[in-house]
Image 1 (tube, helix red, strand yellow):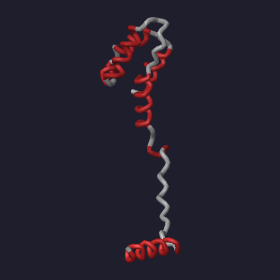
Image 2 (image 1 turned 120 degrees about the vertical axis):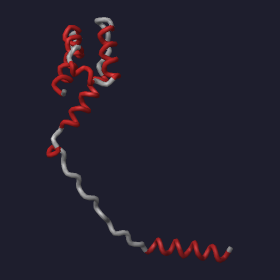
Image 3 (image 1 turned 30 degrees about the vertical axis):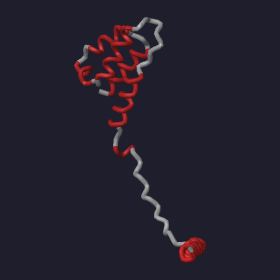
Image 4 (image 1 turned 90 degrees about the vertical axis):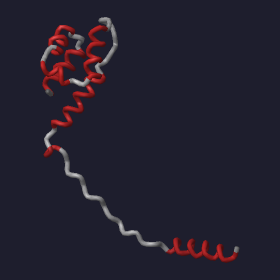
Length: 105
């Protein structure tokens, strides 16, 4: 699928309408999301000097590429660093001050 998407993206960027039509007749074209198929049709219908970019197709290619990545290529997450939280001297003073203020009122 990744090779198919690569060919489709290359043809779309090059504005090779003959190759895009051939690729859209391929059986793997049925696995494309609706927004990608609609984008391909819009690019095919656009004028030759149009500046439409295959954004959805390139995004789908990138998503598929990320799914295909080998698990060994993904770095292991580092464990969270635990820091001990100890009350500071100033935090006790603030609490005592607030407690005294409540008694006075």
